[in-house]
Length: 237
Image 1 (cartoon, rainbow, N blue to C red):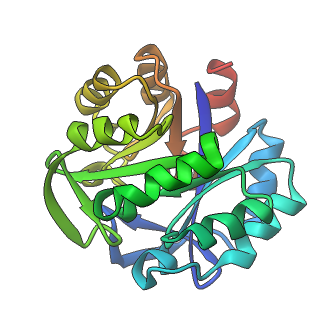
Image 2: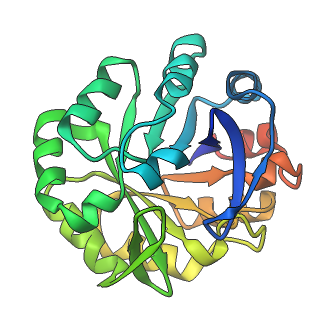
C-alpha cells in the first residue's frame, strides 16, 4: 500500500481543515517545499496535494507551489483542486505533475473525465468525496443524490483506474477512517482505491493495508505527530 502524505494549500501555505470546512483552516507548516522534502526523507515516493483555493474558485490558483514540489523533490505529485478543463490537465501534466485528480467534474461532467482518460490514461484519477454516502462537489459545499459507489462504477465504466475516496465526516478529525465504506467501494469496482480522511495512527494504516487498499492519505496525523510517517511507509512495503 502506498502512503500519500498530504499538503493542502491556501494562499501558498500548507493548511488543514476540519471536515472540509474552510473556516477551520489552520496553517500547519511554514513552507510546502520544506515539508515535502521532509516527506521525501521519511521514505515516501508520492505526495498528495490539494489546491483548496482552486476548489473554491474552480480554476488552478496555487500552481507554482505544486510545480516547485514536482521539480525540486523526487516525489511523484498527485494533485487535485480546481482542475476543470482539458487545458488545466495538460498544463499540469506538462509541468511534471504525475497524477491529476478530477473531483467536482466527475460528478458534474463525466464526459470530460472520459475524454481525459482517453487522452492521458492512468495519469487521471477521480476523487469521490461523500457526506453520508452521497457524493459532494465544489469544495464539498454542494451535496448530491448520487451514491458514492454508483459514481465509482460510472467512473470505472469510462476507464478510470484510480479513485481517492473521502468520507467528509472523517476528514481532519483524527477519528479513524470509515473502513466499512472503504470496503464497500473496494468491492464495488476494480479500480485502485486510496483511503482519505480520518487516518490517525499506525493501527489505522495496518487496518487499511489489511483491506488491500491501493493507498492511504495521511494529513493531520503527520502534523500532529499521532502517526510516524517513516513507520507507516515501512509497514506498507
